[in-house]
Amino acid sequence: MEKKLIGVDLGGTTAKIAILTTDGKIEEKWSVATDIEDEGSHIVRNIGDSINQKLTDLQLDNSGFYGIGMGTPGTIDYEKGTVKGAYNLNWAKTQNVAADLKAITGLDVYLDNDANIAAVGERWQGAGEGSANVFFVTLGTGVGGGIFAEGKILHGAKGAAGEIGHITVDTSEHAYDCTCGKKGCLETIASATGIVRVAKDLARTYEKGSKLKTTSEEITSKLIFELAAENDELATKVVDHICFYLGLACSHIGNMLNPEKIIIGGGVSAAGDALLKPIQAYFEGMVFPAVRESTSISIATLGNDAGVLGAAWLALPAE
Image 1: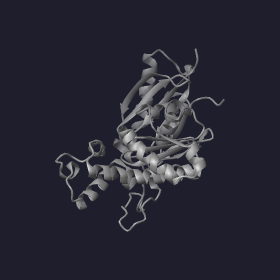
Image 2: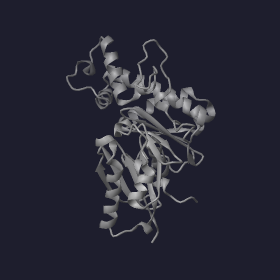
Image 3: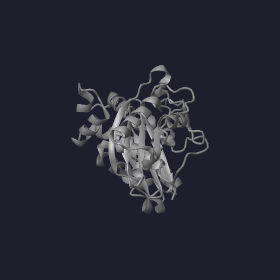
Image 4: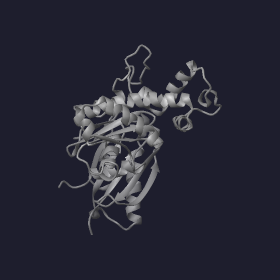
């Protein structure tokens, strides 16, 4: 029987876990709660125990697996298999994640950043269609990115490659402060929270009638796109505003890296073509011809499965 892979996508609320074949088919999928108590000291133990229990239930043993791939927030030392600075997990200090998880399960463990594994998942089984050069942009509470270039994940000197959320796109005096300490980062405008901030600011000076301006509903990025679809002029202005900056940031990626695919995922990407088409239009006006002809932008297709798929890919044996 051909060996299988285990993928773990660790998040602040849950760890998604899956057993997969080497061609990317998910055979089993489950999750465990992320217990961040006691400085996150229970997280790895709970994941390891859950994997061991699942293999026992399925009457499988370690000989049937190549190993465990795992995506995690935080700064990763890829040689040592450690993670630190994952504050949403309460992992301020260095955690020996790979060694600890291997000690519990007996399987080899391969780590990478959560944005990188989402990029790999989409590249392997999703919108990337197996391309050798893919840039993944995730639009959620923040804005993240991952680079898969010429067949491998790019990490950079300190593991910070792909941080598109902190590209400076607004240099005006009104640029928003970012949590990273800079001003005018893409994340301050195009994250789910950034989009809402933009909407509220534009609404203050908007003098025409608008449901977005007068609504008693909680303003969310989803509501903004829904109202734009109904031709609400203010909502349309908000969408155009954020898509301009996303198109600008994507043009920098295109002109510098010339990937075959720029894939947009995360919760905001649920807006689909209403997000994609204006980004594409701005992008095409900002890149030089060779990039316009060879780099396409698309919406992610895998949803929550991108992480476990990309994580499992880490455990594939080298060809």
